[in-house]
Length: 517
Image 1: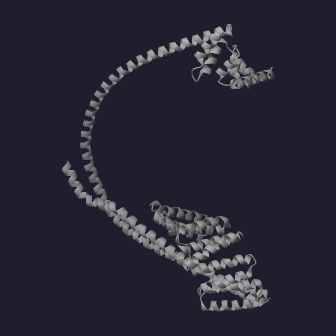
Image 2: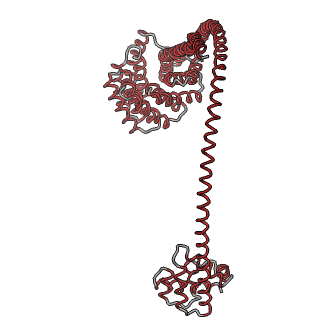
Image 3: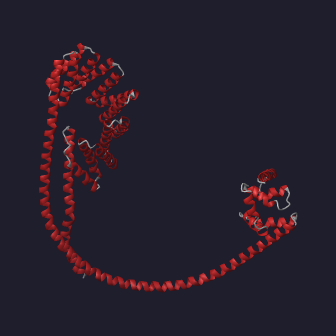
C-alpha cells in the first residue's frame, strides 16, 4: 500500500505543481494589467488630460483591495478619486482620497498619502470649507517631509485659504515659509505662485503698490508659457488703479507674449475677459462687443475639445477592452485543458487517499480502544481513592460544623440571657459587660446586637425606624443603647467616639424625636 502511494505521488506531483502555479500566473498577469491602468491614468492626469472616462481605474482599485495589495491599492484609490472628481462625483472622490491616505500610511507610501490629503483639501476648498481645507493642506505638507518643492506648494495653499477667510497674519506667516522653501528648492513655478498670492493679499488690504512689487517679482520667474498670465495679473491691478499708461504698457506686452506662444484656451478666455472690462472702462463699446464674440468663440472651442477628448477616451477604452477580451479567451482555452488534467489527478489522489485513510483508520481505532481500556482502569482506581478521601473529609467537616453550630447556639443563648437580665435590671454593669464581650468582637457586631435585641424586644427596632426614618446610624445605635443605664464614657466606648460626640448625638436625637411628636 505504501509503495503504491509513493508511485502515485511521483506521477502526479509535476501536474499538481502546474495546477497550483496557474492561479498565481493569472493573478500576476492581471496585476500587471491593473498596474498599467493606474500608470496610464497617472500619466494623463499629470499632463492635464481629460480622465473622466477612465472607468477601468475603478476595476484596478477593486482588484488590489480584494488581493489585499495595499501597496498598489493606495495609488489606485488616489487616481480613482481623481477620475471621480473629473466626473463631478465629489462625495465618491472624497471617499477614494481617504482610502488612498489610509492605504498609503499603512504601507509607508507617503507620496500617495500626501497627494490624497492635498486633493481632499481641494475638495473642501471647492465646497466652501476653507477652514477645514487648511488642516488637510498642513497634513500634506508634513507628509512630504524633505520634498521642499511639494511642501512649499502645500503651505502656499494653506496661505491662500487664510487669505480667503481674512486671516492675513496667518496667511503672511505661511507665505513666508512657502517662499523660503521654494527658493531653497529653486522651484520658480511655486515661487511665482507665492508672490502672486502675496499680491492678492496686499490688494485685499488696499496696498496696491506692494501688490505691484510682488507681481513684478513673478515676471523673472515664469517661463514663456506662463508669462502672459503674469502680465495679465499686472494689467488687472493697473486697471483697478485706473493708471492707463502702465495699463497700456503691460497690456501691450501681454498681447505680444500671447502671439509668441501657443496659449491654452482657458488663458485666452481670461485675456478676452480682461479686454472686455478694459474696453468698457474707457467706453469703447464696439471693441467690448468684438472681444465678447471672441470670448464666446474660445469658450465654444473649449467645449468642443472636451467633447472630442471624451470620444478619444471612449475609443481607447474600447481598444483596451478588446485586447483584454482576447487575452482572456486565450487564457480560458489553457485553463480548460489544465482543468481536465486536474480532474484526473484529483480522482486518482482521492482513490489513493481513501485506501490509505482506511488502513490508518483501522490502526487508529485499535489504538484508541486499547488506550480507552487502560484509561478506564486507571480512572476506576482513582475514583475509588477519591471517594475514600471525600468520605473522610465529609466526616471531619461534619464534626467541625456540629461544633461550630453548638458554640454559636450557646453564644446566642448567653446573649439573650444577658438581654433578659438587663431588661429587668438596666443598671446591671456585669450583665452589660458580658453582653459587650459577647457581641462587640467581630466586624458585624452591631448586626448581632440588633438581632439579639429584636429577640428580647420584638418589633421595637421596626417601630423606631417607622416613627423616626431620618435617624442617622449613630443616632439609631444610641437609641438602642439607651435601654441600658450606661455612663457617658461607656456610650463613647461602645459607639467608638468621644464623649463630646456622644453629647452631640444625644442632642440631635432628642431634637428629631421632639419634632416628630
